[in-house]
Amino acid sequence: MDNPAASLKERLGRYGIWSVGLRSEDPGRRAEVDESAVELEELGFGGLWLGGNSSAANAAPLIRATQGITVGTSIQSIWQHEPAVAAAARAELEAAHPGRFVLGLGVSHAKLAEQYRRPYSALVGYLDALDAAGVPSERRVLAALGPKTLELARDRAAGAIPYLTTPEHTAYARDILGDAPLLAPELKVVLERNPERARGVARDYLAMYLSLPNYTDNFLRHGFTESDLADGGSDRLIDAVFAWGDDSRVRERVTAFHAAGADHVALQVVDGGPSDALPRAAWRRLADLLA
Image (cartoon, rainbow, N blue to C red; front, side, top):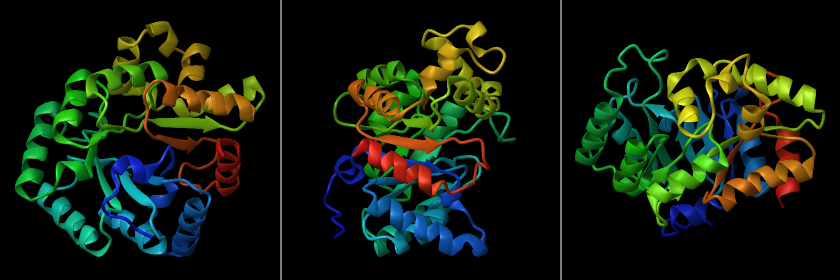
């Protein structure tokens, strides 16, 4: 049964699923998406993280379809959702399903948001507006990578949900956050044993992200070089930000994030297919290997 008094860390548990497909707004896919969410809850995952520019409206059907799993946005872009509207939607969902929704916020990227200006100041202003609208800090998390935003996640949110990072960044983030806040990094998983094929799938998927300075600057801050970012990413970079290989190797990579200080790891299956697919067989395999 749902327990609104449980802490966010307790509710999320150690593992969740990050997926663009779960935020689908296609009425023809509604039944399939809801069935997938129900199965993920039954498999033991504690959180569903809705990729892309998602909102409470995307989370609501999944929350209604399931019994107690936590659903979060990863992320809701501050440029494309007015804070008053976001606060009202969150309040409505909270009233109907207490404790089930987490508002994950981020500044997105200059290439993806025309309004992108002074992102840190804009995020502070957005949090000010959410405060004024009554959104509790413990019900929101930030897509934080750099030190200033991680400090903001510590001081004005329940914690951080970093995307496309490494165990080394996780340790760095934990040091800034301290013990109490949630730290829930995303980790991409390629369930392929052959190194050439696994890294090929990973490079294809990583290509877009290597054009976004927020990510590349973060890599450079944490020991990678310009040569690691060239030609689709070096093997060193691919192996750091993707878990691939047999079950033991994938399990080892996930465990490395926990050992570095993660409370929860949001697992994104990457298989070379459409980004909005629902890879249910792969999710079952993940549940088995992490059991």
